[in-house]
Amino acid sequence: MGMTLAERILATAAGKDEVVAGEFVVADIGLALLHDIFAAQVFDMLGEVGVDRIFDPDKTVVVIDHLVPAPSAEAAALHQRIRQHVTRLGIKSFYDAGEGICHQLLPERGHVRPGMLIVGTDSHTTTYGALGAGGTGIGTSDMVYALATGRLWFRVPETIRFELSGDLEQGVTWKDVILHLAGRFGADAAQYRAMEFGGPAVKNADMSSRLTVSNMAVEMGAKFGLFAADEITDRYLRDRGGEGTESFTPDSDANYEAVHEVLLSGLPPQVAMPHEVDRVGSVVDVEGIAIDQAFIGSCTNGRIEDLRAAAEVLQGRHIASGVRLLVVPASRAVLKEALDSGVLATLVDAGASVLAPGCGPCFGGHGGLLGPGERCIGTHNRNFIGRMGSADAEIYLGSPATVAASALAGSIADPRHLEVSNV
Image (cartoon, rainbow, N blue to C red; front, side, top):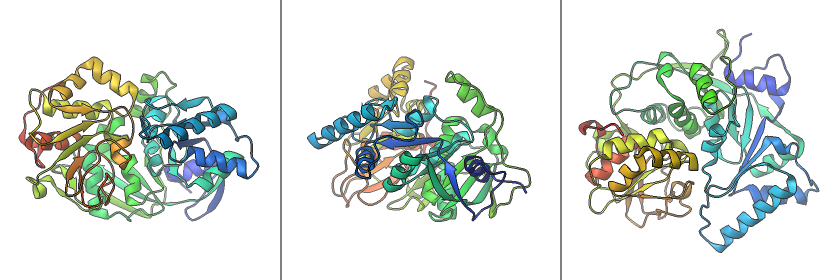
């Protein structure tokens, strides 16, 4: 019987010829990811249960990215503890504060390959499905077990297939696509299911776009958000100095819980409205709503392609009076490329404030928090109450182009109304 991508990944990790949806398996972990919000706690818990080593230091990655730079003495002390644990456990893949966001660094630095099973102490670990890897978030106690044994149990998820066709119009991006899917199908449409993205349209989705879509699959409840590995995957891996890959696809006779056909032609820019990611409509529906802050960054849309898209809108223009524009590159490498290419200069000339690579504004940790009654539109992945500071603030989500256009207007704006320049 044919298998979906999720089934193929879990069958391999469990050492089985095949698995079926609903089956429980014990699978080998290909890679374990921890970041600074939970790493120290997990390592402390390992010690509390008498474990003084981890299953494989070479299959463990630790990133300090949420509290960067350390915004308090407590955060600095937490970082110290993490560094001590990393040294004690012999973990070589450690990215200290300022290197970037975990979900950018792992693909960028070659840790992710098609077919891998990856667990992380962050819900957006689904990001790695862009490369055909099974990435999923787990809790601290599960991570303690995974680090101690190198294994973890999984229920093989049912898979929902999204057949995407058509061409995106000018000014519309794959961030708009995943927002549209969330709005059309709902935040619980893929609860403990795998989302598999295919169809002729995905051939036009570069890796940055795929990372965005897989990242936000979890906003629809997904366990995995998967693209097949193809020529685009192969090129991405080779461009970063790694080995290429053969195609990694679902079987032609795979069994899906549902198959949804989605036409992308004619799709307008999308905006998620407070306070739910699936409360989505056309930018036209919310155009003109005043904003106080615009944010371009996060593990969803902080890559060079995103910064360039914003710069093309902002080129030769300046943000509206009374608006704060925050730009947070997803990694040091993205920051350097933005510097070398002139993209960063364009953003700064337009009035942007550039923060250190990290997660700060996205999760309301520090940097760019909102006060009561303030309104922000950003490229991040969540707009829940209190996400960026005050519970009385409002958060809208859109593409980098939509956010940049809104910063110029001082209110939510349609990027299709602006001429853009190549940067």
